[in-house]
Structures are given as structure tokens and as C-alpha cells.
Amino acid sequence: MKKPKVITAGEAVGWIRNGSTLCTIGMSLVSSCETILKEIERQFLETGEPRELTYLHSCGQADRRGGFVHLAHENLLKRVIGGHWGLGPQMMDLIAGNKVEAYCLPQGQMANMYHSMALREPGKISKIGLGTFIDPRIEGGKMNERTKPLEDIVEVIEIDGEEYLRYKEIPIDTLLIRGTYADENGNISTEEEAMVLEVLPAVMAAKRFGGKVICQVKRILKAGSMEPKRVVVPGVFVDGIVVCDDVYENHRQTSSWYYDPSYSGQAKVSESASEPLPLSVRKIIGRRAVMLLSKDSIINVGTGIPNDVIGGILEEEDLLDDITITVESGIYGGVPAGGIDFGISRNPQALIPHDRQFEFYNGAGIDFTFMGAGEMDQHGNVNATRMGNKAPGAGGFIDITTLAKTVVFCSTFTGKDLDVGYDSEGIRVRKEGKIKKLVNNVQQISYNGKLAARNGQNMYYVTERAVFRLTEDGPMLIEIAEGIDLQTDVLDQMEFTPLISTNLKFTDKAVYQEKPVGIKERMVGA
Image 1 (cartoon, helix red, strand yellow):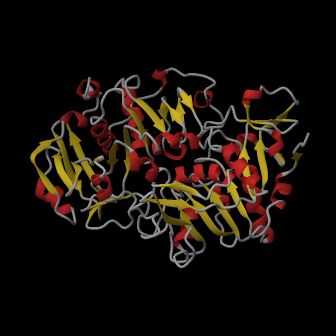
Image 2 (image 1 turned 135 degrees about the horizontal axis):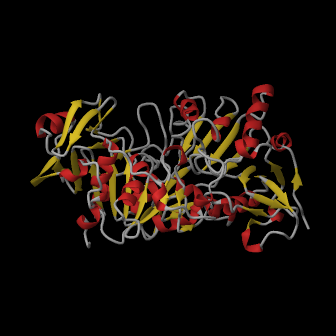
Image 3 (image 1 turned 45 degrees about the vertical axis):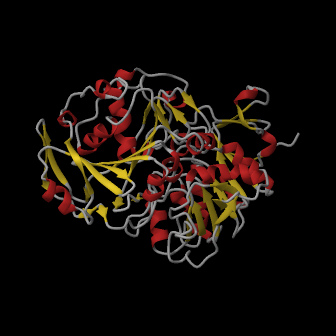
């Protein structure tokens, strides 16, 4: 039987050739191979090698300090092909400074590209990305000036008279994965990881190209001691195993803690353990967004305001039995963690593979998705992927919003230094934000409003003072908060004049109170 070698992190880095393609699997800091990534960084800074790598990753894999941050060095990387860099400012700086070639692709398409590559298919073929900055007729996912003159890695094709995008294969030379344990035969389990991820498809893709698979684990168990169904990757596909040098520092379940069994399914904690979210502008926006829900909906929450407040609001409003929360990482139920721990959930009902989750989002489509947003324009286009010269990237945004039945964007009305006051009578602007978010044309098209309207999709843009609904003729203002002046606080803070509903309503003042507001009784179908 073929067995992998047990190697040091230093030896693992020696397997990575200059100019080769390195792929890692993880999300946020979940399943990050910190021992190996730190050694790559150390060796590069000391010796200048490995260098000129192409780095492939489907998800954002950082917490501002760890994860792919260790790879964010000029000349260590030549090219990065990834889904999201929002929690890796060092990588965004490389991209903004034209110090690396940079392509962004939708996270779900990347996760499923591994299947296509493993099966020797002619690329990943999908409608996801058409009409957005991924479309080669717009930007082709090229994120800086250095990349613009380079080859396209996505192309438009026609099948049976309909347009699709073909995401071209990217051969993998070295794949880094993480497991909880390996046995002496190299079989890998992931029971204490907080996500299932797309580990096995990536392994199969690497093997198809003759690539090396290296796995970081906590420890090695005796051969035969692992239940067969616990094995995520059979040992015959693993080339090297690195036992973590410091599990509390370099093999954390997520950024904020080493291990909590309530996030990986080994235990349930009392729901009373969590405190209600303090009232804030973000919570107000989240509350108004949640009021759009109907009973028994399956929802998705994205990064930013949604992930930080939607789960907590549903919990304190006693809606967790009425609404099923999903997260793109493959989570169903529970209460999502926020911020740098995005992608995991306390007390989940189910954890399925990351790539399989996108079969739902890209196929049947989620009932509701709640997404953060940076800008919306007069056409209903939304930008959530580029702010100035900073490019956090798409993540799962494009995959999820394209086919969701209802999309709810959550954003403050203006940005930077906004200060608002609120009480039981409504809201007032004490200091206006310096950045307008309702603009004539968005900087980057992450969501195509014209296509969405043409396809009959329901879309709302919810802010602390105003709510818009997308129509075939553009965004329509349908609601403002009491205490807000329509002209001064809304229209004068926009670069375009929206359609205004003939039945313009006031926001329910309950969203501004401290205590739960009884959203369950206000929902459609309650």
C-alpha cells in the first residue's frame, strides 16, 4: 500500500518549485495550514525561495494576520487567482500596487472547478458571472492594471443559442490541505474542523495533474483506528503529512479560538449563552431587512452587516425554528459567527461540503440572500467587490445573488464618518457620511441590475433611512424613516434621482427600539 511520508514543514516547502502553482483549501482561518504557510514565508524572506508562484484559492483564507497573508510578498507570488481578499489587506495592497498579477473568480465556480478539472472536462461552464466584472467583455475578473493586458482565464461561449462562461482549468502542482488527524496509512479525517470545504475534489484535481498533496494534521493515529466513514481523503492520495508544531497557535479551529465543539458538531450549547446584540445602525438595518422574510424561508447571509447581525436578530426574535440560515461554507442552521470568523455557525444542524452548497445556490437558488454592498447606481447595479483601489473580491457574492429568489442588500446610506441618532420616534442624521453610496455608475459591477430585473428577481436595498426596490426602470424609493427629510437626507445625498413610489411609506419605528420587536408576527405567512 502506498503511504505518505511524514515530513517537516521545511521539507514540505522544499517540494514547492519556483514558478509552480500552489493551491490551498480553507475559509477565513478555518483549516489554514499555518505551520506550512509560516515556513513558506520564513524561507522566502531568508533565501528568496520559493518564488514566482501562482497562488490558487477559492475562498478568502485570512484573518488579517494569518492564512494567505504569509504568502503576500512581492516576488514570492507572481500571480494570484482567488475569490476573496477582504480579510487579507496585505494581499489587497499587492494587488492595488500592481506587484502581482491578480484575477478574481466567483468562489462557488472555483470550488466546483476542482470537479471539472479532476474529470478532465473542458472547463467549468456556467451562466454565473455573465454581465458582471467577471465577464471578459467587461473586465474578465482582472483586478489591476498589470493584469489587464494578460490572457483571459474566462471566455464567453454559446451552447444551444445561449451564452455561458467557460472558466478555464488551472493545473495544480502543489495542494495544501488540513485535517484533524491522519492515521499511519495517511487517511485523513476532519471532525474537529468547523467546515467540510472542498478538500476531496481539490485532491482529485491535483492528482489529475500529477501534483503533490500535503496535509497538516494535529497528530497521527494508529492504522485501522479510524472509522472508514470518517475518512475524508484516502491515504493513497496524500504525498506528505506535516504534524503541526503548535496546535494552539497553528491549528486553531478558527481565528478567535482553538476549539469549540459546538461549531464542529460534537456538542450543543444552550441558546441562552448568547447576549442580545446591542442596538446600533447595523442592527437597525438588519432588523428592517429581516422584516422582508416570510415563514419557512431558507436564507443565506453574506459578509459584513448581514453576517454580523442577521443571525443574532433571528435568535433574539425567536425565529430560528421558522427560518433556516445557510452559509456558503456549507452550514445549515445555528447562529453564524461574525467578523474574522465568518463562515462558521454555533449549533449547526448540518455541515455539507462547500462545493456542494453551491449546487443549491447555483441550481434551485436560495429563497432570500442578505448581502453587504458598497454602492448602487441608477441602473440597480451593485458594487461589493472594489472600493477605490482596494479590491476585496467577489467571494460567493456573484454565485449567490445571481439565482436567489430575493436579494436584500444591507448598507448604510452614506459611508465614512456617518453618525446618526435614533429613538422610539425615528432617526436623525447628526453627521453625514463623506462618501456617497448611491451613485450614477458603480465602480465595478458585482450585481447586474438590468439582468436581475429582466429575470424577474426581487431585489431590495435597505439602509438605516431608506429602502429601495429594483424595478425594470431602475431603483424605486419605497420607504423612508420618520425623522428623515426626503430632500435633504435622501435625495441630496444621491448622485441620481430615483423613482419614488406613489405609496411612499415610513419605516416601522419598532426597528429603533432596544427590545425585540416581534418580527415573527410581522412576517408574511405568520
